[in-house]
Image 1: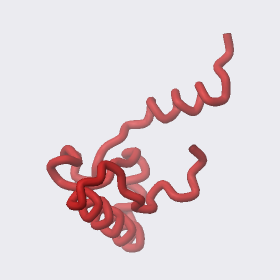
Image 2: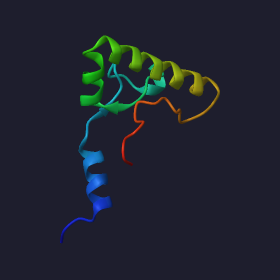
Image 3: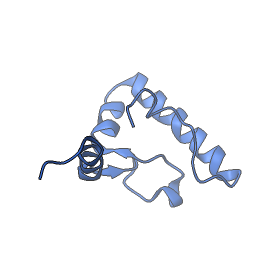
Image 4: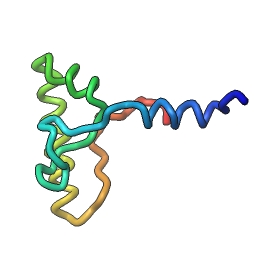
Length: 80
């Protein structure tokens, strides 16, 4: 049986290796979770490093306010 579009999307999302930039738990560092490939791509350029740092700052601010999720912008424009 072929997978439906939503099932394919979930499978792709599940197969990705999600992590933080440091490789440690987000609860310990306050960093955002993103696919490993995305983090590597961001870390490879100066602009990407700034974007990752800004996302981490927003995540830490939201966490300090007691929020579980933060609109940090790393996933902006991605189909979900």
